[in-house]
Length: 487
Image (cartoon, rainbow, N blue to C red; front, side, top):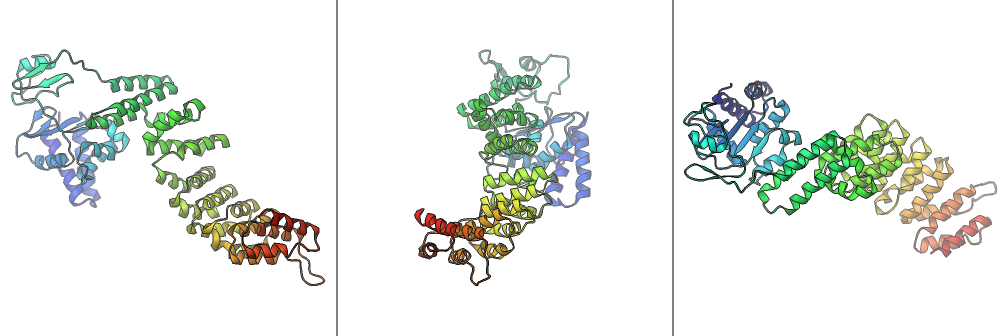
């Protein structure tokens, strides 16, 4: 068994290095190796109270090297006990120690500490607030606690094990209240959820998660809120979240599943993104889109997937970024405007136009000159409103070289939606008949320009349309008449 003094010394050394010299990676590795070596085999329960530190129920003497430093870190975060299980994972232990060495966020409660931990670490290592520990006791007190007398020698100075629920501390000794059953409804739900997950009964798991939310809403003791967060993560580990997300696609369960996923924040976003990336049908993608648009966290995880190596992942995430209007996705989207797959570039064009800010113009200009007509068409169709007025010149430069009739028409309509004086002037010029005996202008160009003029309110566009009422081309005359009638 590892000596308690060794645990405190190793922990104090690690905390000191993290605070004083966090850049010294070699010393940090050595210190963490020592700390993990003393904690991993058997685990430990490290507690502090007004009298000092306690390791696995054994009070430590005052003046123990490192004890003062560890107590300070516990007190600053509002921590009373940290229970490290045997076989703890290095990543979980490191996460707790790093956060213990960091400064509190200002909320000053253990709940804040646990919320800042990764979920896996919060579930593996139990962190509790301060409590009144029982005093050293004799064999009669141990009998009250349920420990067999004579089986394990207990030092006279040692504190007894933590009191179970239903015990009331008083002086002297401990009294058992027989009328207070040791029952935790959350623990019952956790056990039921585990059994349901083993049977892959995901509807039942969802119902149990909803029960946790209902109990949390009815809870009047704010100090117990952290317990519900931990319980919910035990009911819905990462392996279960994707299944709940699939349940959310069912019409009858969508509201319940979405409320649970919203409560799970970034972890649920990650699960939904994985499903979105692999969704084989448009209907499934739309379903996951709909749920993700209701989430309040995890946008950084969405944006990071725009650099995924698989084209279909980038396409799906790009579409989602457009639906969510994520300003933070603009730069990665612009970078993907030259993606090797045209399906990605098309999704990027749609996303940038939906986000619709001046920062998106660079990417849209690039996509207006894409080699594939479907990409150019997608970009042209999304241009409009005030944010796109800086694209008038780019459209005008593109028009003489455009070979696709559909894209050419949509570019003229985009000029009409923008409606700037320069755009109206270029539309009027395009709608005019060709000048000169041998000059020819395709009828499709003129008709598209007339359609664009019909979208613009104002005297200049009206005058241009009226000038075409006597045009020699019957189709142009009819289009001008229709445009004026639609005002």
